Length: 86
Image 1: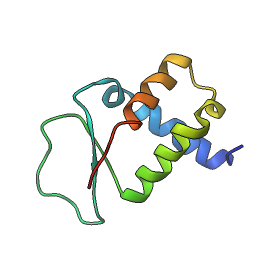
Image 2: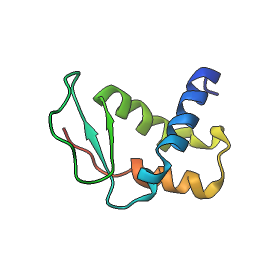
Image 3: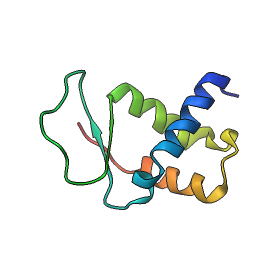
Image 4: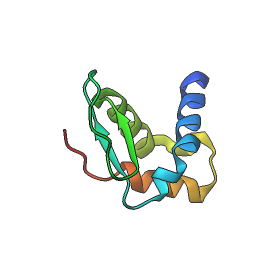
């Protein structure tokens, strides 16, 4: 079982980014600690490599613990199971 603070953060992340998670044109942009001067032309979720690794590990291993509706779980699993690169 995950700690309640991580569960709250992850649940908030999912609902805040749900439009991007549902859009097949969306992508994950992995960034360093410096900001990028360009604005992407698609819906983008910007995360650090560490955050992405944590999200992917949790989503792919024990996402059911969040007790989100099954359709939202499927959307999030599909989004985070894609290959990402730096």
